[in-house]
Image (cartoon, rainbow, N blue to C red; front, side, top):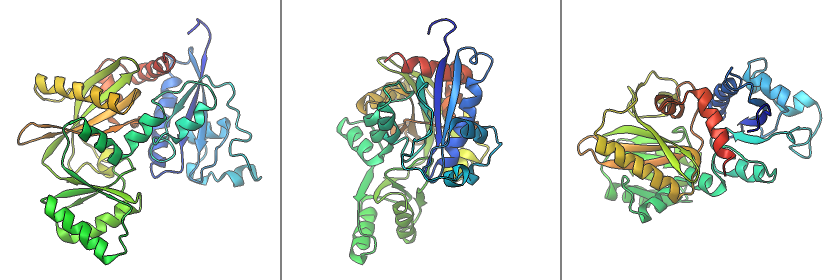
Length: 355
């Protein structure tokens, strides 16, 4: 960066996904980091809020969402601008943005949709591209690729676009689950994040309700065996060379690591995780290999299970836009690795400009 020349960061947040509120919380943290003493001489920031209806708000209104002057649930664009929009970007001034920083968790963001849109601006963005984002969001495709590479995972079953209103279909699915697994099992929508739509099933009577819950999010459903595991996570940043953070562990008081545990509970975070050095080395190796397999770069968080009985490493999933909230593991992992939040967001911008 030329001395004295500020870069304008375009921070995009909100969205019409089921992770809307998480996105706002992440954006508040990143917004504060860019406005810190260490960064405000290097960057300016323009904010772009997408409300739950999919409407884009201008930078001034978006910033008022982040600083609390406007409540985000009061932002139907038609009411604010009092006019109909044909082009959803009409009136949104983004031409002077130098680098995009999308923080749209879930649908239309983390799945690569926003990356495809931003590509037409011919400006760099923080994070990975369309393919890596789409594969990282889709649990079924992700696990299929991992299986072909023989990366260690829990056993799983896939059901795609099944008619759960058909009694024969329901019975077939239940029988397949009972044949392959012992309880408990986890029932997950293929495309979702923050554990939304996921159920832990402890007996046969709970299967159908869990399938219905997952189907409300996605018609493609994943069933995984439920093991006694430790939740282990690793941060990734970089492009041609991927760097790994310290390894962290989440100890939670709830039955499993669900949405409330992630965002509303006082979990015990241990960084670095108290695991053998050889296991740490192997986790970092698998984290890099799995990101390379899906063409994931920029930044991501790779989640693992460590089976308690055997210390077996099991790759769970990759999050291509991990949370930046005060309870989020990704920034805590990098803080423990020597990058405070202010340094982390600046580093991610530098990485985006190094493509």
